Length: 138
Image (cartoon, rainbow, N blue to C red; front, side):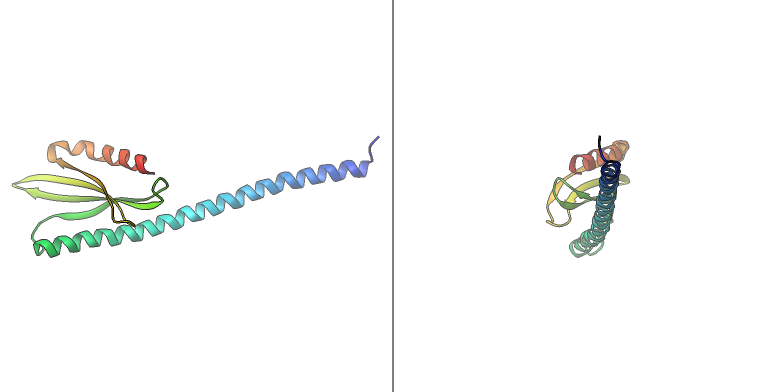
């Protein structure tokens, strides 16, 4: 026959271990959320700088007469590349026809990861292409 004090101590230790694991999981989850938020903020900073660099380069090359509008369509942290990825959108009108170019760019290494151009007739697939590109790099 076991001692009731030993049984109570065993139950107490088991409960302590279980609650400790939950606390540890909660702390780990909070740390991961905090790190993800920090990366998102950093990527937004890089995205803003990248957008400005493209605008400045265009202004320098064309004296501001290109008529191209640069915006960051999406910025996110890529686990695959361990880097901040920006998807830039360049909009222009040529002879009354709208053109959009989506460029994927690594904001840390300055590496061009590809681009795709769309005429006004092809714009309906632009958002789906962006989502596909994000999923492939996350």
